[in-house]
Image (tube, rainbow, N blue to C red; front, side, top):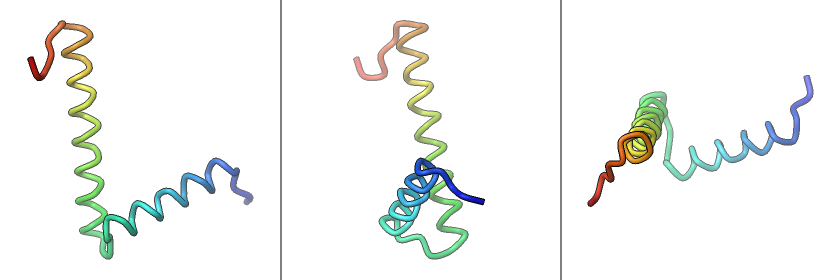
Length: 59
């Protein structure tokens, strides 16, 4: 199965991220994943507060 150039580029970025984050175990990967999901959720909630409710997180 041949990978698209986009998929190859995405995989290379993931490899770079894992190296930068000094990931060496499954626990490290789980912690990185948890932190990433928390960041996405926080950003999404901040945007929702601002767009839908007109609140700013930092007045």
